[in-house]
Amino acid sequence: MAREAATLLYFGLEKEYKQAKLKAAENLGVHLLPSNLEVALELDRMAEETEGPARTERLIQMRREALEIMRIVKAYCPVLIGSVWRGTVRRGSDIDIAVYHDAPEEIVTLLKAGGLEVSRTERVTVTKQGKSEGSFHIHAETSGKHGLEVVVRAAEETGRKRKCEVFGDELRGLRLQELEKVLRENPGQRFLPV
Image (cartoon, rainbow, N blue to C red):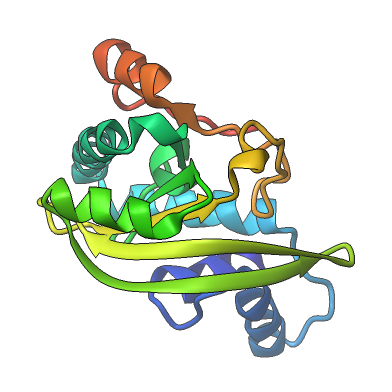
């Protein structure tokens, strides 16, 4: 089940874990859904089997690009999150960075001044456990042609703990100095809860 859902995600037939699990259940004629963690681990194995050593090279390149971008927005507590933090990149992965500031347009201006071409921006509101949370998303492409999404959250949310919806653990990420250390000491390091 988890492998089928991972296959749907890997080949872009589904974009979200929930839809991939439902489609996998339908394809296999079963009713019990795997956890997001089970699907994520299968997706990671599939990427490793398919992409081989080039995957680690891509991860290191994406972490270096993330570091450059985090330096541009260093005043706003940037945190590298997502697959580039975890070390689970695959073809098509983007770089995800969270920053904390109450004026998102200033972040857009900083990124543009840093040489990034912003392709679009959007305000996103999600409801979690009955509470609405808003953020501002900036989409761009790095110099290495990787997708980039910078999520701007309110300054008051700096340091707030979040749970990873995929792996189920704390969404810790890497701050600027932590990423510098990882790139110096173990650039391919992975951050998985298992």
